[in-house]
Amino acid sequence: MLQIIRIHNELLGTYGDRGNADVLQFRAGLRDIKAKVIDVSYLDPLPKSGDIYLLGGAEDAAQLLSLTALRKGSILAHAANKGAVVLAICAGFQIIGTNYSTRDQENAGLGLLDVTTTPGDRRLVGDIAVQSPLFTVPMTGFENHSSVTTLGQDVQEFGTVITGNGNGVAGIDGAISNNIFGTYLHGPVLARNPEFADLLLERALGEALPTVIDELADHYAHWRRNVARRNVAKSSI
Amino acid sequence: MQVAKFAGFLSRAIGNQGETLPGRILLALEPEAISLLAQQKEVILVSGTNGKTSTTRAIATIVSQLGPVTTSSSGSNLSWGAANALMSDAPYAVLEIDELHLPAVIAQTDPTVVLLLNLTRDQLHRMYEVKRVADRWHVECAEAVNTVFVADIDDPFVNYSIANATNVVRVSFEGRLHPDGAVCPRCGEYLTWAGGHYSCSCGLTNKISELKFADGSAAYRNAILANVVGEVLGAEPVEFEASQLERSISKDVGGKRVHFRLTKNPASWTEALRSELHEDVILVLNARQVDGIDTSWLWDVSFRALQGHHVVVCGERALDIAYRIHVEGIPSTVSDTFEQALALAKGSEISVLTAYTAFFELAM
Image (cartoon, rainbow over all chains, first blue to last red; front, side):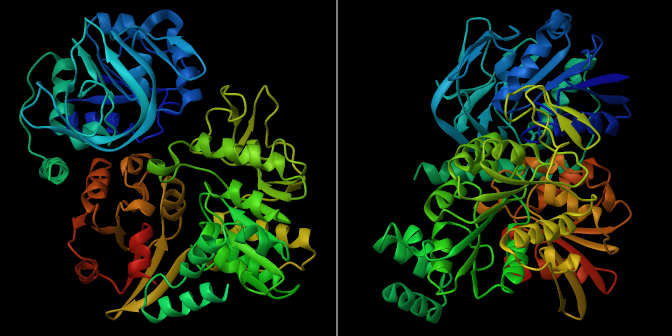
């Protein structure tokens, strides 16, 4: 049974990122792979045995509470070290970094990814598309944040920004290291990009997945990529 | 002001934005127009994420017992909409005000009563965060020492907004869960919830209020809140049908009875899906500015109530909603046009849940 841990959705669920867990479970189910979604609230201890851990976007105070709770016992870092998959979006991406600061304070992050986040000077809101070396097709999503994230030596970017802002610097979005993925893409990102959902399932299971066809999912992803391409074409005129 | 009114006549004649153009021109000619016009009136403002338009209409009905009322044109809730309504000679002005515009309009009008309904996620591409809106309300409510605030404090963001206000009527409906209420908006601690009641170590709670009522639908609550505002002003209570306080419209289209309901964010979709629906359900989703250009929030709504219904989706973002409900195990047909969606219906009565722009295009 694949365990998908949805971390603190009541805090890290501002931008619909809870759907990432639902999509993973759904796409596992298409292959008759049993998966369950375990919702872990701020008050619950984080399970050590998760296969995939998911963190989403949040408002400032909620983000800080979540970080404070996750520091206890460093369970997420231990799980990631053992190979568990971690997908962290936006505020979640920021808190698994080395540190992040707001206008009011600087916070040590969980240290899963070698990235540093600082406040930016404007809000970055809108559709975003990213070309990641992990995929042949662009990943699409929606971003809404005002921070700038800088990568350290030990991580690669998730992808190059085709349209939108991503990390807000260097024309890139997100960061990856082994099975740990950070990105600014909401949407939710796994709903918009079934290839990404399947990659995470494969990493969690340690084997290639049988191919399945979910026409609606592919149609949806294809359509969003076309919209992104049109946006690029428009902005280059 | 005559110029502005004439411009309204002209613009209605050419069929373009007639409702707010006079207000826009007036504000361009006289930036202080709202303050100046408001001085001669009893101003009542209504704001919140959901229920502004219908509750404003209800309050206008209640207040009309006291004298002539000028009120906002349906949904026209930015500053020029306020300016427009204030141009009337009526002694009472009942205005719905956009959440982000509310602090400025409170400062400009020094209102007699302000009704704060609720604050949940909506149009985040514009609002960014719920807390950001509540912070602005909090500051302005403390400044408005002459105003009576009627506040539904089952919403912790509303309760925080009026925490430092001078005159407050706090109303509670036995508490209810808030979709975005995990963190105390006042102090940032984790809010403790027991059923629909919350409390925080900083003291923010909905257990203490001036008025308590039984729980009920959003329409029922808004009717009560409207009457509380009326009572503050000295008006007799008015009874409303629930349907008068929903943004819903029924009409005959192509031989079928079509029931439209406005649904625009997770809270209002959840409320609409809790209501009785016909076997045929059409979901219409656009994502223009007023709809919210980000559709991610669809994943925060459970559509399980649609299980067993015949569902057709359409609108510019039909695929977003089709895939979202697909993952929840609800099949649907994607239709290119609303007319085609109607034609696919099996029965003669159809429930249509639709976001903002489509509601105005199809139902009005």
